Structure formats: structure tokens, C-alpha cells
Length: 241
Image 1 (tube, rainbow, N blue to C red):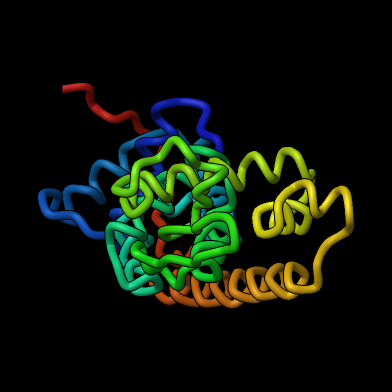
Image 2 (tube, one colour):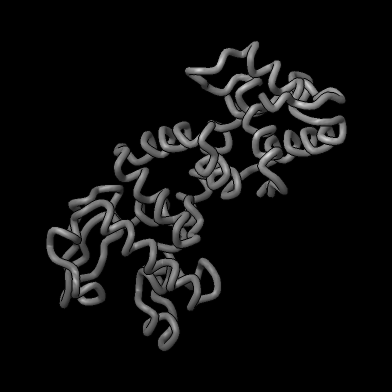
């Protein structure tokens, strides 16, 4: 992830995005060119070049998180996952809580797809409990939830993603975490992992791999910056008035 050392760096990168073609409704391109051309000293040129390189080299989870956290590209990320899930509310909830609980977004989406195929009303009856909603929250594990909360997109996503975060922290890796999420920590650590759970892990990871490939391809089709199109700054100072 790119780290900016000052507000000026943030301004430069924002102007960079707008200048090379990102959407804007209230700033004309010629005005942006003027501001950008006068934004800093020559010493900023190396920063701009490095920023362009890092933006173009981003892939996978870093690409999802950085594009989602950027106001210039957040809408494109939401649109992509809306198409993937078939529901904008689901896409936004999973993105929001995966970022909040530091869960890889692609893992959260793949998990929900494996659990419910993104059906917020999904129900699976077990011998002693019932799994409900997007992340198939178990009625025994989440006994404090009301029926309405089980089927609420935001609540179910928050609880499910927070739980997989706990599994990641406890299991120390994604394979163990998925096994715990599916079969329970007792069965995984005490009596080994059931074959059904191993198949489940493979399915989630397959979903995740395909999703990342699709996202990388989709983002590269419009988000890549041509270094030759970037104007480097001159040795002048931006007027304060």
C-alpha cells in the first residue's frame, strides 16, 4: 500500500488520477492540468513516478483494498462486486466489514458464495441447529440473534466476517480458519478434519482464486495508468490565493 508523507502527496496523487482520465463532474481537465503543473518542485517527480509504478503493479487483495479505499475508484469496486453477488447491498456490506475486521475481501466473498450463494434468506437445517443467511450463521453459536437479524444483510455480514476473523486469529492460517468455520474448532483440533470440510475448503479457495483473477482483469481494463501520459511538475510553486 502506498503511504503518503504529507497532504501535498495526497493532493498530487488525487490530481494524477483526475488528470489521466478518472471521473470528475466539477473540475475541467485544463484547470487540473494547470494545478498539477504548478503543484510542487522537481523533487516531487520521483514520487510521482514511484506512485504510478506502485499503482500499476497492484494485484490481488492490495488492489481490492486500495481501489475500494480510494474515492476515485471506490464506485468501480462496488460495481464489480455488485455484479459478482447480484446485489449492491451485499457487495457493500461484505466490503465494509472485510475492511473493518481486516479479512481479505476475496476470502469473505468466496466464503459467502460457498455458504449461501449470496442468498440472504438461505436456510440449512442440521440435526441440532439451523444455519441462516449470507454467512450461514449457526443458531447455537449465534444464539443471541433474532430471526430478523439472521436474515439482515448487514448484521449477518458483520457477524460472519467477524467470526472468520476470529477463526483466522485462532487457526493462524486460512486453511485452518475455513475448517473451523465449517466444522467447528473442536472437530478440527480434536478429531481431525472431516473429508466434507476438506472439500469445502477447496471450494472456497477455488472461488477465491477465480474471483481475484476476474477482479485483476477488470481493474486492469480501465485503472492502469500510462506513465507516458503523466506530466511531471515544474520547478515552480503553487500560488496560495
